[in-house]
Image 1 (cartoon, rainbow, N blue to C red):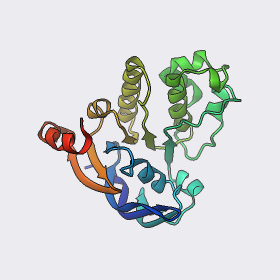
Image 2 (cartoon, one colour; image 1 turned 30 degrees about the horizontal axis):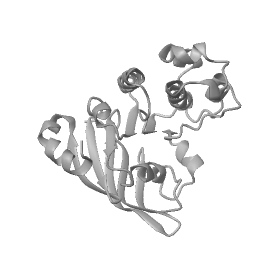
Image 3 (tube, rainbow, N blue to C red; image 1 turned 90 degrees about the vertical axis):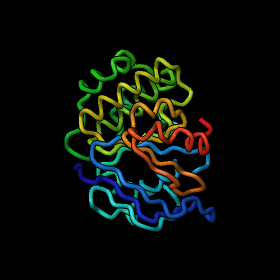
Length: 234
């Protein structure tokens, strides 16, 4: 069995006085693709931000590669090998695509070289000198992921990658995730597009009102379609 890379136990999180997460428990094994499902406001993005220390207050336990991280600041959590691709992508408009790519520091050995990244994302090589604002939505999404692959992070937190993108781009992103899994990366997805996630994830957690309410494996997908309709309306 694969070793456990990430475990949350009884995680509560707040933004100011707003209590968002209420005792979240989940685990992710090395090399897995795990998807957090749920309606908007269920707490999925906050769970990712809590892992990274980007919420106001956190309580409970968050272990990354065996190390307790609940009291660590974000920069130290990143150095445990965690890369985050937020929904808004965070591309710097005044920098070129390649300058955006080179901006984050290397946090661990084993990150992809620029040549490897351009081999995976040939569009980015063609647009290397283009300002961030000139990239299409799909190119910006590819750049946001490519940027964290250079850092050496092996646990990737990807938030709403497919949102607002054309089907042909979504297919390319699915191929990218499959390739990264084959290279041993561990991936946590937050996805509203269930059909996109269904073909990629090994396991699914369903969130509602800041809690994990159900979990199942991909092989159990057909048996859980009625339940998914109830929670997600898919």
